[in-house]
Length: 213
Image 1: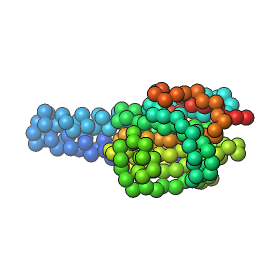
Image 2 (image 1 turned 180 degrees about the vertical axis):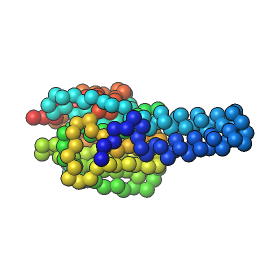
Image 3 (image 1 turned 60 degrees about the horizontal axis):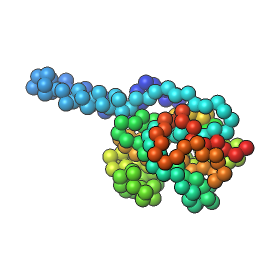
């Protein structure tokens, strides 16, 4: 199923709700009473925007899986999928970033798991351990790459459109997170990093790293 609509389909229920509320408020209270609901409908349209992006065609390039700001880059032990040391890149998405998530490399989905129970602020380090999160394990020509969608204090819904066995292209949309969140990207330790902490990135466009060949 394609997910290239100009506004993600998951957003239309919110847009329709606030437009309906605006119509009811206009009927009972007049124009000014409907303004707050109209503003919320416009914000939801903006929040669920789904722009086209053009990923690098250079071989072995890893592009950003999300829009936002890189909180930190660390070497850590990853024992769920990579089972060893990995470079973790954490990206924080504010309410005003595009929230569509994109595949960082040409790869096959080999593992998907959703776990967790808390909704701590996504910028806190412990959010990646306790919050509701979705793991996406990728096989990129024999190299393991892990993506993690993480909810936040306001973000309460993770959406993942892919399943094990799916083949994804670099920059292809694979899901979204509703209303502020974090995405973690785990890479092999010998990658050539192209970004640093504090950098702003665009999902599907910004080069994060180059994989060893």
